[in-house]
Image 1: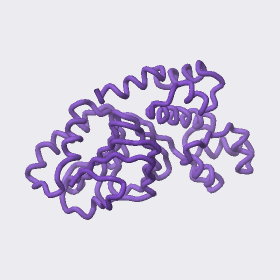
Image 2: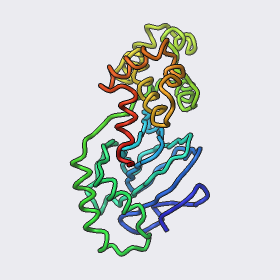
Image 3: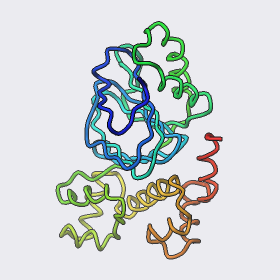
Image 4: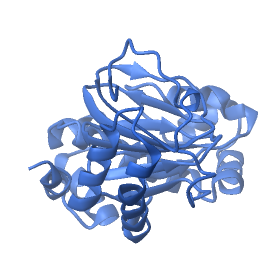
Amino acid sequence: MAIIDQKTQFNPDSLNISVVGIAAEVGRHDSGMHQHKKGQLLFAPQGCMSFALGNSICILPPTKAVWIPPSTQHRAMMTNVVAYRSLYFDCTAFKCPSDIIMIEVNALLKALIDRMALWAWDKPEDEMQNTAALFWEEFYDAKRHSFQLPLPSNRRFTKFRQQLMEESFLVPDLTSIADSVGASTKTVTRLFKIETGMSYQDWRHQWRLLKAIELLSREMQVNDVAHSLGFCSDSAFIAFFKKQTGQTPLNFIKSNTVILS
């Protein structure tokens, strides 16, 4: 069996095979923080997922896949119906990446993921080898992306980190977060620079970009996204998004749905 639902009890590490595939459609779901001994490739051809990955957050829009190395703590959150495919690899049998990697999924790679996700869990190992080899060849040739944002680990930001996982949370400006953690704006800026490599202002810009990508991937209207993220106007949001991505929001939506046709 490879097709599961929200009620299915599933542990990929309990299956003694080199490749385990699953396919599912899930609505609102929170996996909780967990890890696997197997490495995992996760692909959502429809919908959008958000992740907590150790000291970072990550957005997985359509046409992208994320590789999660073995024994990496992660938490997947879905707030709308998501069609997803997940492949688990025994990394003693394959040359797996040791880092978290996000890649562009082209038509061939999508076809391979779909095929492997629907493999029966008792499929003979020798019947997996050729397809798995082609998958890894395409994986390493794929264009890489980064929709990942580091998080501050300082204890002052514990509540802030928790709030980031809330769907309706809007990241505050520098003065507001400084007031909420009981520190000066200079201290907040210094801590963010040390722990994330960015000033708070630059970090907030990146958060707004990731959140915009998530909301657009969920087919929210551009004006609604602009309002949700606190932009003063639709045109201000469009200019911000184009500066960060090189695309208008509408062009981004089109480019991230073309693979589904």
